[in-house]
Image (cartoon, rainbow, N blue to C red; front, side, top):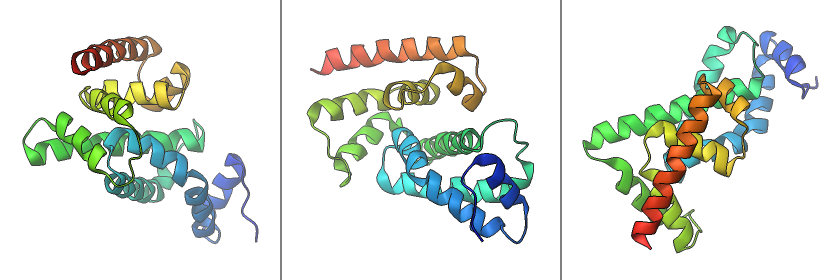
Length: 181
């Protein structure tokens, strides 16, 4: 039996107990890479991003019955991924009982999967110093080129607040880069 690729048909397959597991495998296959990169921009470390991605899919699987289909499946998954990423970063900061910003950036440069140059490392270091919400908004806008309207649905925040967060984040990043050049 073939699993459909459009969201509405996929949701029907997910709701059918005989097709649910196969349909969810299709969801994982389709969304693993884009979710990974959204998560990676927030948690920075490759291994941590993989852990958060796995948690995202576990939470999605367990919550399928709660999905009201008021948004696209991808939006729902991105929201879970962002929330899981932010929760992870907060837990890490509490566990280490320190300011995780610089530690986060230094872990990026030490990461075997990071292939950037010094400019990219400096940008990532600057982004890592941002508060969680500003970091998320900046990453979604700058790296993923996501529209504010889509971010608003994803994060449950007004477009105006997102624009303000992005503007403040850009100012902070610019100041950080200028201080460290």
